[in-house]
Image 1 (cartoon, rainbow, N blue to C red):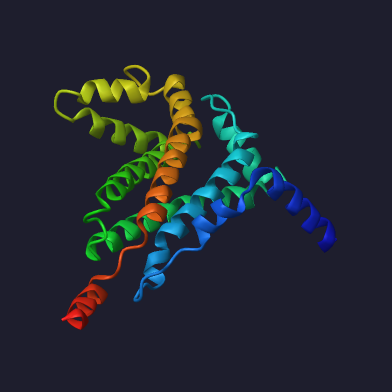
Image 2: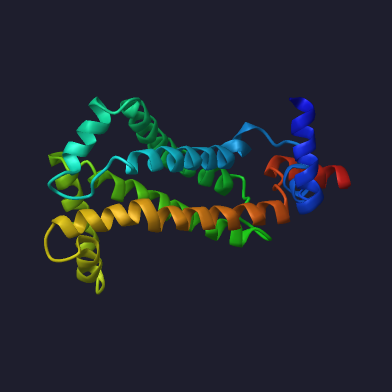
Amino acid sequence: MKRSLTQVGGWIEERLALSPLISAFLDRKIPAGVGWLNTLGSATMVTFIILAVTGIFLSMNYSPSPDHAWDSIQYITEELPFGSLIRGIHYWAANAMVVLVFLHMLRVYFMAAYKYPRELTWVLGVFLLLLVLGAAFTGYLLPWDQKAYWATTVGTKIAGTVPVMGEFQRRLLLGGTDMGAATLTRFYALHMLVIPVGIALLIGGHLFLVIRQGISTPPDRQIKDRNDAR
């Protein structure tokens, strides 16, 4: 078995030459003083992968219409084999991703890792935060129960209070003037297609910049290195 896998790996490597790419991605110098706090970004990416996989399974059994959305959720939770488990993993992974992305950005801010030459990495991270919050907001409506309905009503009204663009934003989210079938379909499309694609693209750019520029040295280590240089 091991020999067969080695042969398959050699066949793929001979044609695609993936070793330099893998080496560039994994074999990187880590500055002294880097600890577990620096893994928050990787943890956030893992939760996104979990959400993507579980979301695919959930979407196969979900109906984005006011007449069937709640029933499909009940079917997933109560009748579909492992449906309750998959939905639970999706729910808790979504909560974990919101918490992790906030903690990651706080770590970057307080360790001054957003400064030159990593400003663009920080900007992409800010947009990632906004998309993660957007995914959480759009996903909240999908069960189409009373709590989701009224929470989304409040959220869209808040969006409508923005000066100049407020009413346009509210209508864009609702798909009209009131909450209805168009709203649910729009939120489902945003949650399942638009936002995940945006997150995946930004994660790719974010990772590229981290690999290109390297991991920043913690501030206390920078001060120690400057003192040692003197």
